Image (tube, rainbow, N blue to C red):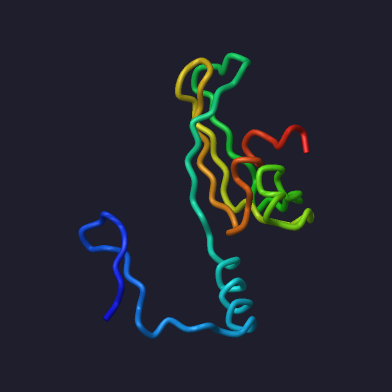
Length: 120
């Protein structure tokens, strides 16, 4: 019989046939994950006033080099990873706010792409 956890009425189940797998299984799973595309929407602030009708589209794909962010250094190697920004569009909301829509390669550190990582 399976074990169920959590407050969700459907529960979170752990199958009876849960088993350990080799590292080869994990590396294949990781490769599949990195080929995915993720979509994000960000509400951003600009110190400078944005002109009426302001919009921005960045030519994509854009290849970026990202160092492992400070916030995850305790669990990830400090490497530089190449990632793709597949779509980037910004639309003015008001004088100082805009909405940034991004489509990225999985594994892109979007939070750091949007606001930097202390200038890294």
